[in-house]
Image 1 (cartoon, one colour):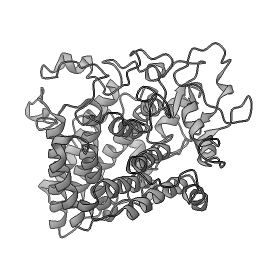
Image 2 (cartoon, one colour):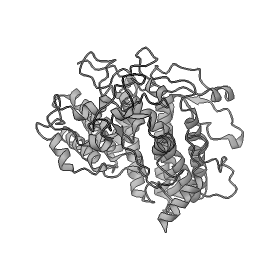
Image 3 (cartoon, rainbow, N blue to C red):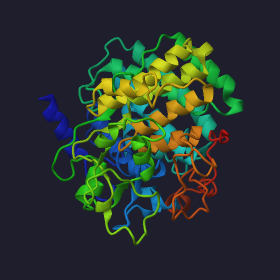
Image 4 (cartoon, rainbow, N blue to C red):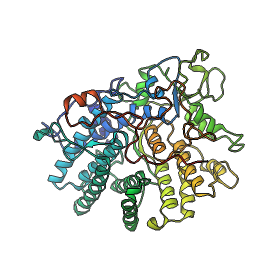
Amino acid sequence: MMKSLKYIILLSFITLSSCEEGFFDVNEDPNNPLTSSPELTFPAAQSALAFVYGGYYNIAGEFWAQHWTQSNGAGQYRVFDNWDVTTSTLSGQYASLYNEALNDLAYVSGEAKANGLGTFYFASEVLKVYIYQLLVDLYDQQPYSQALKGDIGLLNPEYVSGEAIYDSLVIALDRAYEFYQDDVAKESMSSDLYFDGDMQAWIQFYNSLKLKIFLRQSFVPERQSIVTQGISELFSSNPVFLTDRSVTMTQFGTAVNSQNPTYETEVRFMGNNNLVASENIVGFLADTENLGAEIDPRLYEYFNASKASSDYRGQKQGDNTNPSYTNDDNFSKPKLGAQDPVILMSAAEVNFLLAEVALRYPSESGLSITDAQEYYEQGIEASFTSLGLDVAEAANLYSGGGRYEFPIDFEDQLEAIITQKWVSFVNTQGMEAYIEFKRTGYPKAQWDYSSDYILTTPVNNVTGGRPIKRLQFSDDEISRNPNVPAVIEPTVPVWWDVRDAVSN
C-alpha cells in the first residue's frame, strides 16, 4: 500500500516537459496553501529537487566532468560541451529550485516547527541546506536570509556572500537536529521518498552533509580555523555517516512523465541522439597500458558498446562538428534507464569524503592513514556494488600491484581519492563530479598540466581554453530584482575555488 501511495503522490505533482521547466506548477505558493500539510508537501519538494538535480543539472555536469560529450549528429547540449555559459544557462532549473523545491521546504519547515513536528522539520532543513550549498557552489552569492519571504512582501531579497551562507548552513543543520532531538513523539514520516521515513538514515545524511560542507571550503586559507574546529566538533560527537546507503529517489515508472528525468529528456523526448561517451572517461577505464592489464569492469556498466564496431570507444571531448564522424553509432553511449534512481549523495561519495578527511585532518577527525586507505577502498567497493558488480573485482584493482592501489605520497593519495570519486559519479552525479574537480584540480586537466592529464580542453570551446567556474544569474532575475549582483564571467572562480594546479 505504501508503494502505491508513493507513486500516487509522485505522479500528482510531476508535470514534466522536455526542457524540465514548469515542474510542479500546482501549489506555486506553498506559504499560503489551500489544503496541504507537511506530509503531502514534503514529497513534492523531494520530487522537485530530484527532477532538477537528476535532469539538466546532471546532464550539464556530465559534460563539464567529461564523462559525456555531444555527438555530431545532434546539437541539444552543444552549449554545455563548448563551455558556452550565458545568463540563460540552466535558468529554468535555477528558478525551479527556488519556486518549487525551496518554497515547499520552507512551508514544511514553518508548519513543522510551529506544530512541534521534529521529523519533518529536521528533514526539510537538511534538504534546504543541500540545495543552498549546491547553489552557492554554482553561483557563489545567493539570496538567503531574505529569501522565500514573498508572502510577507520581500520580493527583492538581498544577496549574501557564499562564505556567510556556508556558516549559516552549519548553524541551520545543528539547530534542526536539536529540534528533532527535543521532539519526544518522533512522528512518522511515511511519505518520505528518499528514506521511507528512516530517521537514522536522515541523521547519517546530516552528518555526511556537514562533512562535505567543511571539506568544500578546506583549501581556503582564511577558513582553516572554521574547518578544523568544525571537523573536530563533528567527529567528537561519534557521528555515523552514509557509508552503506545512498540518498536516492527511486519511484520512477515506465510511462511518460514518470521516468528518470535524464532518461525522459534525452531518450524519450530526443531520441537518444545527443549523448556519447567522452574518450577521456573511456580511456581511463580501459587504459591497460598505463594503469595495468585489467580493464575496469565499470566501463561495461556505464556505457554500451558502439553499434558500428561493437567495441568501447569514446569521442574526443567537444569535437561535436567533426564531419568524419558519420553518426553517433561510432561511439559508446551512456546506459540510461527509465527507472534509474536519481542520486543526491552516494555511499561511494561519503566513503571518499571520509578518506579525504582521514588523509588531511587526522588530528581533528581521530582517523589515520590506515583509515584513509580503508575508506578509499570501501568507496571503490561501494561504486562497484551500486552497479551490481562483485566487490572482489574491485579488490583486484586496488590490491597490491593493482591499477588502483593506494599510493604512498600524500598528493598522489589525494589525487587517487578524488579521481575514484570522479569515476563513481559517471551517469548519475555529473554536477558533483564537476564541482569536486573545481575544488581539487583532480582529475588532472590539460589546461593545468603539460602532461599526465585526463581531462582535455573541448575542441570547440568558446572561452579561449579557460574552464567554466560558475553559472550566471539569469536575465529574468536581473530584470526583476535590483539586488542581483553584477554579471561575472563564467570563467571566474567561486569563493572556495582557490587551489592552484599542483605541479607534476
